[in-house]
Amino acid sequence: MTGSGDLRDLYQEVILDHNRRPRNFGPLQGADCSAEGSNPLCGDQVKVSLKLAGDVIEEIGFEGSGCAISTASASLMTEALTGKTVAAAAALFERFHHLVATGDPGDHSALAPEESEALGKLAVFSGVREYPMRVKCATLAWHTFKAALAGAGEPVTTERGETRR
Image 1 (tube, one colour):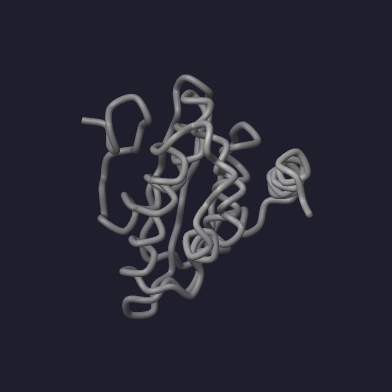
Image 2: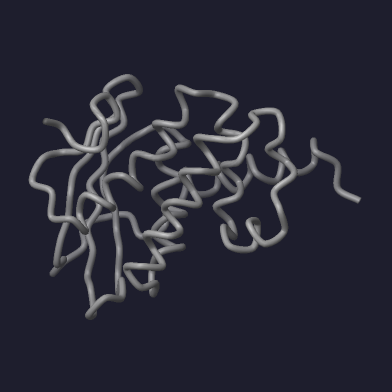
């Protein structure tokens, strides 16, 4: 049986792997929409670009620089959202945001099986809510993704809600 220490080690390895070798990193040629975001407190900068086929996310990529949590979150997000409908992506955004931003900080290892299955690899971020400053790092790419879909012209910032006003 895997103990919580083993699970934390596994989660840490997934995050480190996606930070070292981010998936879908680089400019996305022919993107239908994009948005930029920043986390001034940590220095994270991200641009998320999408190609849509109707209401399906055909391709998603990101560019920028940031801490390990921010980069890994953007990388795992692109993997999770590719091929999803916009509605399914919005639902996953809500699940992910709930995972990292709410709930009992001490109870991150006991995700309900259906929630763990719905989140897939994104469950590695369950411990982030124990570190409130890191929640912004983990959610920056996600809020930037939402802004790209919405066609927001203003950059996303973690310091004033979802978009800079």
